[in-house]
Length: 239
Image (cartoon, rainbow, N blue to C red; front, side, top):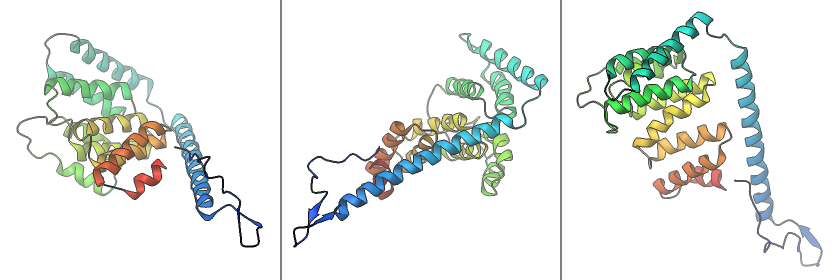
């Protein structure tokens, strides 16, 4: 939040022994500088967002034939989801194709998660037995091979759509590509299972502030501060 100043701090022009005004007190100067610094950071963040969105629009688009095929996959999967009982596995196979071929598409990603939530009855832990499958994903994250991360992550999430390290890795990959809505969708699932976790809330706060959602970012920073019993980074962000 932009710094507000108490009216009671009317000592902006304190006097020295000679009775002449000294100007702003050091404390008030510091608060002014911090408030100005916060505004500058927010403006820079918004400008960066606009630049990345422009680059994304000018970048390589999906071929019309592929876009049409993915849309048909999405519609087939979501049509099945309208039924009271349907094949979760088949719908996953259809939707995972959508999210791996068009990782920026929030609509595809949201349907992908909705199907998995239903499959596991929203139990926040996924399959009872979860065997491996994460090794290659972890290696891709470690070497920052974000294209590979975006391909492997949705398949890893098949057994647990609330797996926080995988969700955060996917969020990081989306961030590097400017897919901010998709990034926040992955983080939303992480926050669902760990709503008070300091690390998850910090990640969410930074990502939310990047897209100008400052009120939501501050709420996350407040949870960071509470979880850590006092966190300077969080307090500076809230101030």
